[in-house]
Length: 143
Image (cartoon, rainbow, N blue to C red; front, side, top):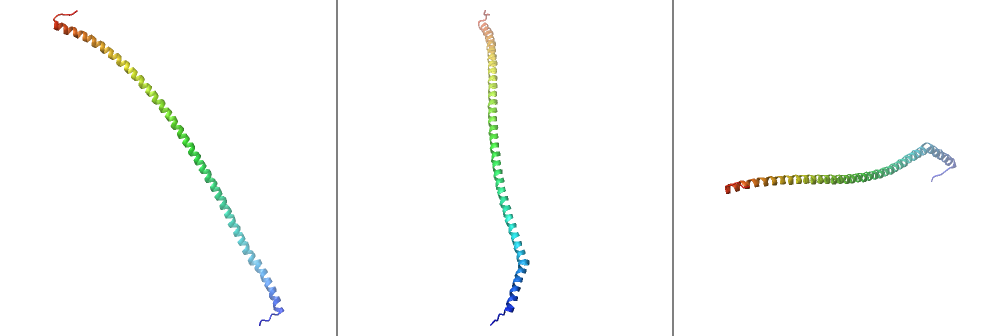
């Protein structure tokens, strides 16, 4: 059986307390401090990552909004340009139509004048020709 004497127990308890104090001071505290520092770094990095993720989400939303706005502006500008182009096209076509009508009217007037002149000339020639034919057939000159 083990016999415990007070002469052995008291020095063992004192040695154990001194050992606990030395280990606590030189080993446990520095290790716990390193672990706490690491934990703080990890938590800081997690906070930074969350902040960066929130900033990325905000910037992405801002980018999407700006892109949608730009698309709306571009579409409106395109629609306006198309409307203006259609208006200009209508004006040009209308002007060309009026010019064509004016040209056709002038050509028709010139054609009518030319036809009238040709009729008059043909009338004169027909009268002369008919007198010649009549005089040849009849053998005498007509008055």
